[in-house]
Amino acid sequence: MRHFDCLTDLRIAAATTAALLIPSLTLAVPPVIGPQVRIDVGGGTFAANETSAAANPLDELEVVGTWNDWRRSTASEIINMGVAVSLNGGTTWTDFLVRPPLANQSNVEGDPMTCSDPRTGNIWVGAISFAGNGGLYVARKNIGATTFQPSVMARVTSSADKCWMTAGPIPGNPNSTRLYIAYNQGVIRSDDLGATWSAPVSLGSGLGFLPRVGPAGELYVVYWNAGSGMILRRSFDGGLTFGAAITIATRLDVWGTQDGTRFPGRYRAPSLGYLAVDPNTGTLYYVYFDTTNIDANGRNVNLYFTKSTTQGASWSVPVVINGDTVPAGDQFFNWLECDSQGRLHLVFNDTRGIVQVDDNINGMHNCYYSYSDDAGATWNETRLTPNAWDSNNDGLNRSDQFIGDYLSLAVAGDRAYPCYLSSQNGNADIFVHAIVRPHLLGDMNCDGVVDILDINPFILALSDPAAYAAAWPDCDISNGDVNGDGNVDILDINPFTALIAGG
Image (cartoon, rainbow, N blue to C red):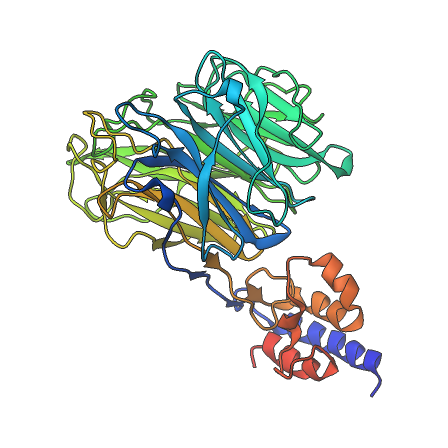
């Protein structure tokens, strides 16, 4: 039988199979969570918190984590940005400090940020030097490099606060890269890979300005307005102008930026929200934490999820997505990412399973990872920390505790890398796991299931492997080697058809 006769037969058989399939009967593959690895080893027993992470979209084994680092502290607190790099998928790490140019250095350099560029594979880190001569600074790591180029000042200012950054195409020019930094003074941008930056475009007052880029270069910035509003601002001209504020959700409970009274422990927990964008469909996903009710232990704080399929013009009714125990715990400090296959990944702190009240001096916590393969309809949780850790072991030895204001998570290809603080060993350390979605035979579109949506990719893999690689760059064509002989060829057609049919 000729090659293309086989493909024709496959199409006929697949069409017949598709008519008989029940859509929910798909073969899913769960991710494998790798071991916990400490990445701030050079910091010894000094404090560390407030993480940020990014992975190279062109090489999922290349990942960077950052945090506030106290390793240079002696009699007084000195804070710098700690950075760790792994080129082998998080197995081993090299950590060091990345500081601003000499003229802009200070004793407090923190609020780290990271981003990666899906076009070039470059990764940037940055932070704020909190001084009159300080401001926002960034440094670039080229693809495959183990170190960063010298830092540059993105904005010299004495009043910058909490910054985050992102990268993506300029609208109308898919072969371009524009960097954005959003912070309390507005949004700045760079078109030369971070060498020079524009003046800020103000978005008004608020906290936790987080930028994200959509598939066509749409720019979204979310933030908390310090009241009841979780807010979105949109730009469709590459950050030159922004539309009016859109309320994503209205909070049930409002507390101040320095307030931690909703949680066991003596730390602050500003109520920030986090956005992810599906790089294929443009769907927006948003998770924030809010009080649901009050019980005998105090306020019960949960994670709320909402999404938009209208570029943020309208949003679904927020729903709680975390599991819990009785009595209820608190879920907070969440970070959300959407990978290239549209899968959602979430990391967060959690106080469940331990009876403790909100006014406890010390709070006991775990860190959790959760994922969704169905656009947020259902979630699967896993505890990452081996045992609960104490907020009092923050490494600072002061009356008020500080465990940071946020966590982070990076995604690339079939991998996710949650990056978080835990004091499980008696001091504040930074940990990462490599969470890997194993390749699944027959999963030709790499969405984690084997179903009728894999038929056309499989046919393309047989007839034109180069076109398949271009259409599904994050997939492995070896998923089509269903008969296990080391080749993807016509001998895989019958076993693939049987696999789709559930045989």
